[in-house]
Image (cartoon, rainbow, N blue to C red):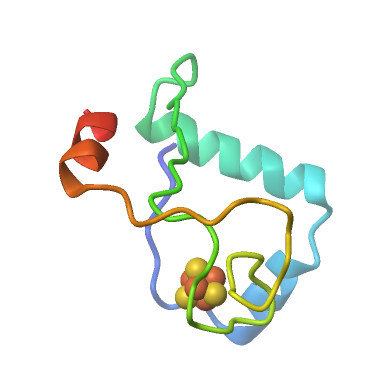
Length: 88
Ligand code: SF4
């Protein structure tokens, strides 16, 4: 039976979900995934750093921030055309 999209979850129902063992959650998520996607297919993604290091912002968790010395050389922002080329 296909899973039903709901927007009326009660607090108790949500807490019960959060209390489920991880393998049960994994099983349920896989079942829903199989309703909508071919389980034999996977998506391949690639991360591209369009600018490495030297960010003027100061997000405490981020090694790209200027104040951190990571040993990785900072680079200028990549040309938009090059980014598009890599994306394609
Ligand atoms: S998360 Fe990192 S890269 Fe993004 S703005 Fe903050 S310091 Fe800069």
